[in-house]
Amino acid sequence: MTTHPKEEKTLLIIKPDAVRRGLIGEIIKRVEVRGLKIVALRMFWAKPEDMDRHYPKDQTWIRRLGEKTLTTYEKYGYDAKKELGTTDVLEIGTQVRGWLISFMTAGPLVKMIVQGVHAVDMVRKLVGQTMPAMAEMGTIRGDYSVDSAAAANQDKRAVRNLVHASETPDEAANEIGLWFSKNEIFEYPRSDEDAIW
Ligand code: ADP
Image 1 (tube, rainbow, N blue to C red):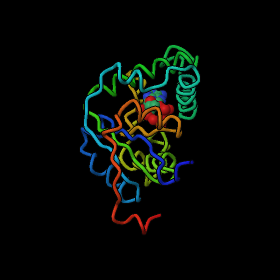
Image 2: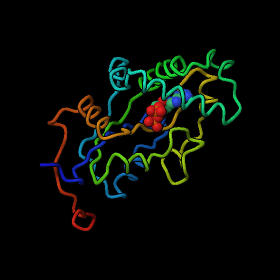
Image 3: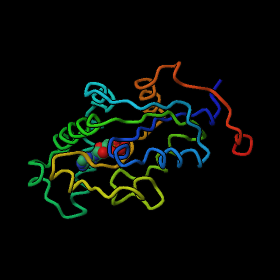
Image 4: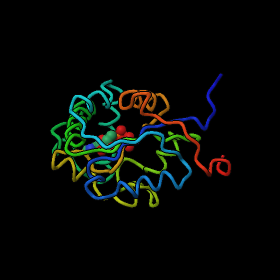
């Protein structure tokens, strides 16, 4: 039997910049008021090896990270060769991945599992695009972050964009398995569920 669409789950991590800025409550509120249900939640401090497992190591993902960076550089007229020493998307992606691991281990994080119809896409939509300058107003990143790849890369660090959210249901299943054990995930009804779906 296929699972009901309202059973879909995704992983959301509140990054160190958001924790330090006191945005935990605001982020959780946006998830809850939309009608999505939090079924697991915990604050923790990740080790580099945990984050290394979390972010994919395959070339496709690393290249995509590099490509996104190059696109942002082109859009704003920055010279990737000058700033990063290369225009090779794999090399750029590898550098960014390293900065990302340092960023994600620099302070406590809050991890949660969010459940609801199309939870993966809905949470990505709440979060907004990767680069704060391109994230739409009304999204978490669009409303609360102003960092950019150009600024971050000059300082050799990851973009501070407040949250991580799984991109696909497969990625979500994998990430949930990495960060939570089965006994940390709860099933319970929300009192407004009958009116929501
Ligand atoms: P998303 O978090 O929207 O899924 P990606 O998977 O492309 O985005 O990237 C993962 C994270 O890496 C981003 O959220 C951001 O913190 C960081 N990042 C992405 N591109 C860059 C970049 N060019 N420079 C610095 N950090 C970056």
